[in-house]
Length: 399
Image (tube, rainbow, N blue to C red; front, side, top):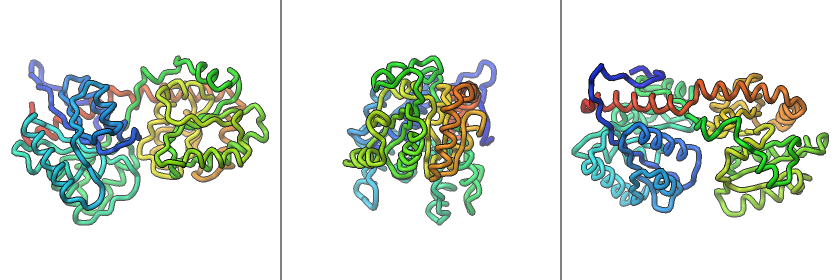
């Protein structure tokens, strides 16, 4: 299989290609990056005419969003962490039952919690679908016996959303490199667009139309670098009294947001300079309102949804050079890269773009063009469909 093919296999002239039945297993409770990618893939394949089922946990963000998309949802999975034999066996039997009853062709998992469930469930099914796994984090994989078994014997393919993960998996000793496929994440270039009006967001928070406005969109976890962001803003505000900033953050643990706000105020960042909003549903307008997007991550970033959304919106990014960010942000062309954990470097990069709006606009235009060329949703759909069909053909011959 060609792991970096950009388009799906084409049927022979006159050939009939039947739709696939695809079961996505999503264990995430929160609307994080990997859950969002899984649901985007489900939506895109449903839009291509395939039957898409979603297995998730009741009350999760995945359940709510999948139902809103009109997908068929099974919210009776448990996906419990740790050694929980009863819960694990319950989920495995559900996978096998759904595969048999609904004629599933492809089972696609997105996190370790559901990957073993998917593997065992597929093995238990009388109708054996292909098993596709996604790996969305940069944390090294331990090449021990069980992980080699999962990769080489129980999975048909592992999808990597970035070169950094793709290269990492292919280099693991004892892992079959032919079972790794590179399918970059995608962005909705219709929802995120340079013509999106961000002025209502500025008006909501009293930000003047021409004021320099730095925005950070990230869940409130240490790896996202909020402390670096606060330190840099406090330094930048000393020489830019008209600076305004917004932090749209998803609180994962009670009290973390309040503690972060307290640290910001202690650093001299008052409500006029920095506002915290919590999770926003109109993130496209929040990004459009920004002069520049800050992504001061300290690690991980197997795929960066915000970096892609900013690019599609035509807004330049200042990001840490970690994970996939050097792939998504072309240094000096679509944004700027800085060392992780370096507030001074972040300050200098932000200052350069805020003081030179023409340069920021130029980078934004280049970012939009790159998003349309490399990260369009159409490309992800074509690549996934091609991968699914090749995996299915090797299992059962789906054409």
